[in-house]
Amino acid sequence: MIVAKIVGNVVSTNKADRLTGKKLLVVQPVDMVSLEPDGKPLVSIDTVGSGVGEIVMVVGGSSARQTELTKDTPIDSAIVGVIDSIEIDGKETFHKR
Image (cartoon, rainbow, N blue to C red; front, side, top):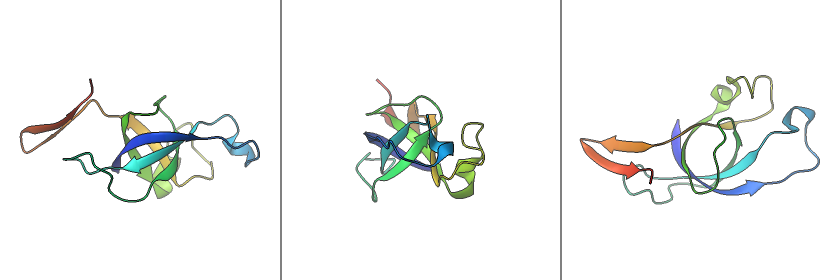
């Protein structure tokens, strides 16, 4: 599982049938302490109603196909939670405002 910031949307009119009606978002992995970008952005399917600017939990691989919305769907990345806060070693590094 990674922590990422949603930085954009993907619109695709022609796609696999199982992706029809699914919201696709661009997520930028971030460092959990500084929230600075940490890696390349990727496209994830939204399973929790998240939006641009939010900090989220993202799973990849076969784990991405374990939600009701993504079962048997051709995806490799899914947003599975919106983060309210992050605390590391007793110090809060992120709090949703």
